[in-house]
Image (cartoon, rainbow, N blue to C red; front, side):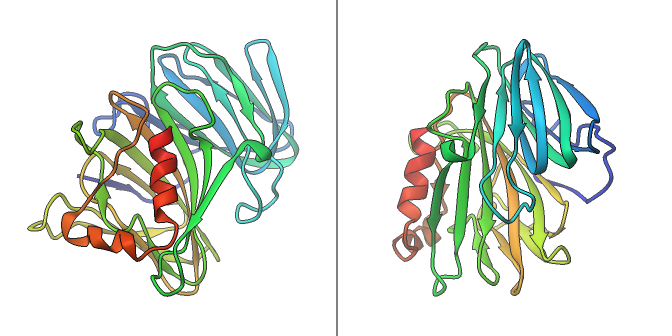
Length: 280
């Protein structure tokens, strides 16, 4: 069942390392650099993507330099950018024009692809929900249907407005079958204002009553199975950096909990969100 990693200063060390006991195919790190500082990411056996949350950087992958990656000063304003790093390649990240906060998301892979940069204009955005359904959600697909990766999907999700639900109706993706595909998942949460908070639910069936985790700015949730809706308190916006790593496929098929699935018909635009993930 899920693991809640409470906010802490990871000092640029992996938050979810390679060969994790719960999610062995997934890697996650948060890097914080001052202007001019460098960090070298060497994840042999894992494809990855480097995504500035705020600030700007240069990223060198092999002999290819991607300059001025990251255009936003505020996480809650504007689209992300990122650089895809194939397995077997090293990425050297240099902070430019001030301090930098950057996420590194990785997925186990033996397929060697080519590196590429994702600019703001390449990011596919989907927004769905309504005030009435309390499900306003905006998704920035960093590694989605438009990008070529092996098993790695990475997105930024915003629960916009004044509180509300995300990952609703409850769904899961931990089995390979006709209407579901198996994916590991890691969430990294931020809130605006930063004192905001939410709750992460996780359960495997109707008889399961928990757990429910109190998530705060900087919380990380590690999920390997079960239904996992999340809610943010009124008056706050919630952001989460989402890493999905497929066991056998890159196509995400979500299995919605049967007794709540009828609410798919009440949430405007949710069909577009489901379609975008299945196109990946």
